[in-house]
Image 1 (spheres, rainbow, N blue to C red):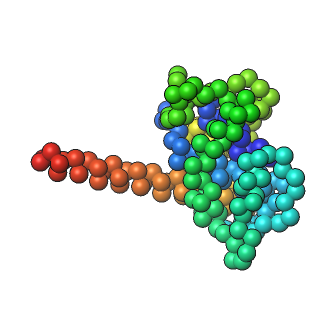
Image 2 (image 1 turned 30 degrees about the horizontal axis):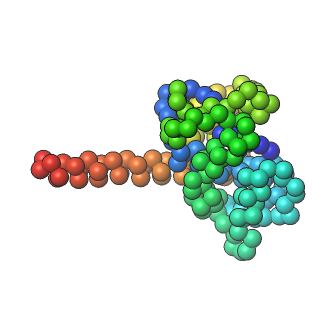
Image 3 (image 1 turned 45 degrees about the horizontal axis):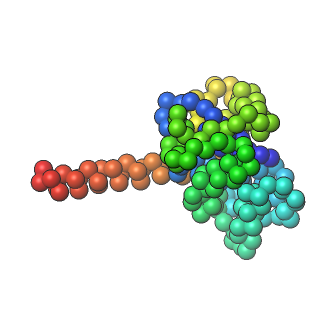
Length: 201
């Protein structure tokens, strides 16, 4: 457990060739929460649907909030639907909680991008060290999620290939991030076209 928090810290702590956006990170955090639930058997996957089970004590306010939002009626919720619903604004919520807990130092004027000279940064703590250790060890779940949201540039060639429930969650995260990127590109084209019309081009 703790994958979502570790992903947030890695995203704030790393340096990659492209910036990590709030939207991509939010989707990745929602996916990481599913892995945290799977790790403690708070949920199971039936094909691509999240089936809630008896939730054990989680000792994490963010995960407890997530658990309270699980759809507990059949036919349950797909992983993809969970990512879009739970992921809305999730990166900012994690940033707020980690800042309140003293795990992240956040300059007053900081909001986006998440990283940079003026952006929020993790402070030295056991939580930061744990995330760094998992990143350095190329732990498969954290590594793949970090790469999917842009918090890591590459994935080692010998990384274990995901299967079963793990593969289902990874595929949903990658699909959602890809879809969000397509929406951004489409909006950029539309905005450029509108600007050209406004200028009479």
